[in-house]
Amino acid sequence: MNKPLNTNVPTGLVSGKAKLRMNLIMLVVLGLYIFSSVMTNSSVLRFNAEFFENVWVMVVQLFPPNWAYAGVVWGKLMETVKMALIATTIAGLLCIPFSLLAANNIVHNKFLYNFTKMFLNIMRTIPELILAVVFVGLFGIGVFSGILALIIFSLGILAKLISETIEAIDMNPLEAIRASGGNTLQVIWYAVVPQVLPQFVSFTLYVFEINVRASVVLGFVGAGGIGLILRQQINFLSYQNVSTIIVITFVVVVIIDYISNKLRGRLV
Image (cartoon, rainbow, N blue to C red; front, side, top):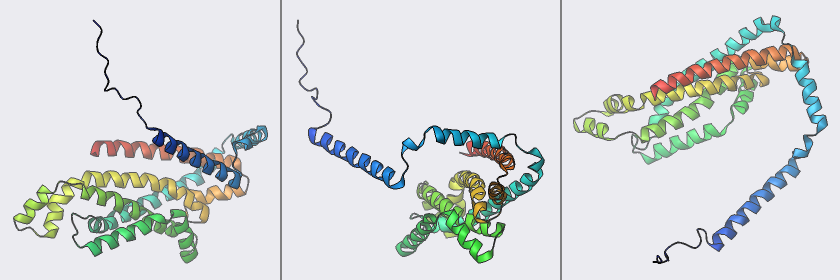
């Protein structure tokens, strides 16, 4: 006996108008990519035989690393790690009040909430490299300028992440403490802090990882750290010293990332 045909099966998953719209969007995006490639002269055709030959020459000049230069590298690399550590610690402390003010379930004053959000958004729009250039111009070459740039950069990231975490917490403990007569500080200490503390430590460690890598780049504009001697050795064409800096920096950053990931994995 023949089974009746199922007339409820859809004949098409996407309508013709939707297909036309998607094709037009893809054409526009492709056109923008082609236009950008032409205007910036960044065509894939530049990866020719001459390009790979120059890359090979550069790689050959990097080896073998000059391990006698490692003593200088270690000193500057520890300076870079200290910059990241100080900046992350200060930013972690400063972000606490900003995170609370940027959480709409803690602050019910719309003006204060929106002003804090706008202030943090402005801070995040300024790249750390631009901040470093400004502070180097104000305070001169050195680690102090780099630390200030990293503090502002880290504060914007941490405050955003922690404020969003606070907005997602369970409100029942907060309401219970308020109903029992607890003030704002007691609500924050006994209801908010226990819920966000693991994420706070995890995000702080994550920002520390970012700051270690960012501080390497800041040295190129005179903000101290390993990037300062890296730029000097590149300018001097001392590629074997550059290779030593790259290898040691890579190993240290990988170790820091590994330890940080393990710690964050235990907290979350």
